[in-house]
Length: 247
Ligand SMILES: [Zn+2]
Image 1 (cartoon, protein in one colour):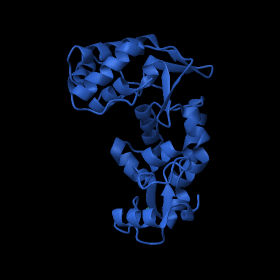
Image 2 (cartoon, rainbow, N blue to C red; image 1 turned 30 degrees about the horizontal axis):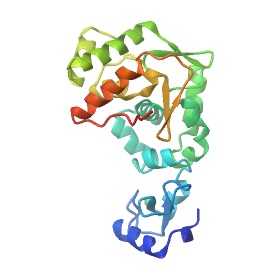
Image 3 (spheres, helix red, strand yellow; image 1 turned 135 degrees about the vertical axis):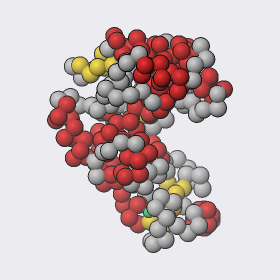
């Protein structure tokens, strides 16, 4: 992408909007324009002002660019957002939250590593766990390269959905699971954020989300589509941000 593809007018407007700073790290040095989605029209909405250093590190993938790179200016920021100690863990939560298939993320690993220096960590994690994926959603196991339903966990997923539909809040559900001593995937405690990411993850009705597109996957669903959609509506009614899901 060349800077010259944006018109002078858009360039001026973008710089003004950004207050003549990098829209990611606030640097004032060597500012350049970059399109969020290089295949879309070069409008102001599709334009981000970056410093040279951020520009060089930015991933090509529009979804990662927008939702990971622009959202977190550093791995440290991402770790602090997800309240975890290491990058892999943060990235795993990012995947869970966004319903991203690990393989797809890994294919973006090259660019991502330059942004976040995570490639090595990801590879180590694969080695340690003996399977290609730290993004195994609660309710599933990863066997023979596929997501297979974990019966105990799937039961909990179903409970979470039906409790939420019956009017229980995220905190209430987390409390119920904690007092019933139901383990999480990593043996920790249930938090509102965990419940919310389960309620929004289209993986449970048989889909994967990638680059804001929902694609049907071969894995077995735990929740039917109708229930999933119903839950997204309730999330919105209660003032939350639901999963983008219009299929
Ligand atoms: Zn920058």
